[in-house]
Image 1 (spheres, one colour):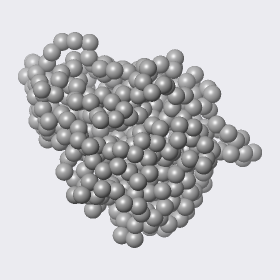
Image 2 (spheres, helix red, strand yellow):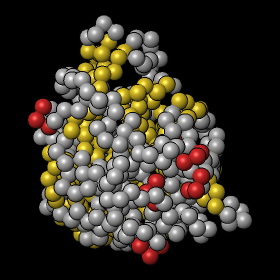
Image 3 (cartoon, helix red, strand yellow):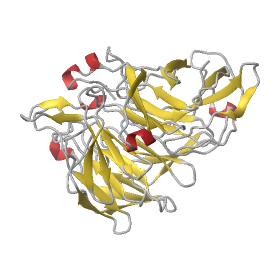
Amino acid sequence: MFTPVDGSQTALALEAEWTLTTDMAVERAEHSATVLSSGRVLVVGGVYGESSAEVFDQASGTWATTGSLKNGRYQHHAVRLASGTVLAFGGCDAPVCAYEHILTSAELYEPQTGTWRAVGALAEARILDAASALLDGRVLTTGSCKDGRCLDQVGASASAELFDPVAEKWSPAASMATSRAGHTTTLLPNGHVLAAGGYSVDALGYPEVTASSEVYDPDSNTWSKAVPLPGPRWLHRAVVMEDATLVLAGGCSGLPASCLGSLYSTALASPLKALVAGGTWKEVVGLARISHGAAAFAGGVLVAGGAEASGAWSPAASQLIGGSAAPLPTLGAARGSPTVTTLLSGAVLVAGGHGESSVLSSAEVLKLTVRGSGGAPGEGGTSGAGGGGAGGDGQGADARESGACGCRTPAQESGHSAVVLFAFGVLGIWRRRAR
């Protein structure tokens, strides 16, 4: 049971199940997932410099290969532009991500032809940067680990760049006041962008994790200070709920060697409008994870997979809503650094990731049905995804079966096509599992 975001006291029950899709053609972790204008999901790259790509169709629960990247990459970004093309950039192309293997290259995917072509390169090689699409169609990328692993004292970058989709080139943007890597950026209602937390360096040049945040104004090309987080945090996920509340879920306060011992069990929440006005952060119930996925779902935030304090990959999934955490059926497999994509039907696709003994090619879809206290379906049927760029169509199957993960096969289930939200993990930067 949970209390709806609007504060009403109507008791609602969440019924959820995971449905197995067919396997992807390639094992993937630390890859990207982006929704095309058609609603299908484009999955690209992965460890350790994978160049292949494939497309998921929820209606059939199947994957189909498409054109390969010009340059294999992982821990990169892939952003859909207003034209419907997908911009992939940065990341790494080798198992040991030393500086010389961090990429400046960028390329565009044409959905109509299923092909990639090179576009203007970044001025700075970037990994563990953050990226946001602006209201005017440009793409902002900020920060990076200068050594590729955030292990050495060379620290993080404060620089930023803007991609112009018309010129298909990058240009310098004003640098942040604080260097950052493993941080998040979020588009605010006024078109500004909030950068929060991250790995950084102090005034003496020593590595630290920062609690600072700052806001970028694209019109003036300037950064200004914003309300800091209650404590230093990086490797978290930023999700906008359907009530326009920003939630920072997971992450840790320690540097790489001590990160697992300093996981945050609380999340941070703040309304976007409040952040525009200066805002404050409120600590809410969270889930102690890094290398997890998170997505707006059913009025709250779905957190799935990732690494626990023990370092083991987790199959757990939870719904953060109304200040509490409600456990959901476990994933069919433990997953670290999967992609998590919210579908138009209100379902969520979780694909790939580091498994217990190898990188995974499997994927699964979570459907969540809202029911009233009397047992009848709640208004809207299957929940919509809401904020974070995803919506719901209020439809979906309502069949259930028992089992450890509630999984069903593609032959038993079909649904609707998908819209966007991906998250990739970064524990693999300093801790790798065998393929």
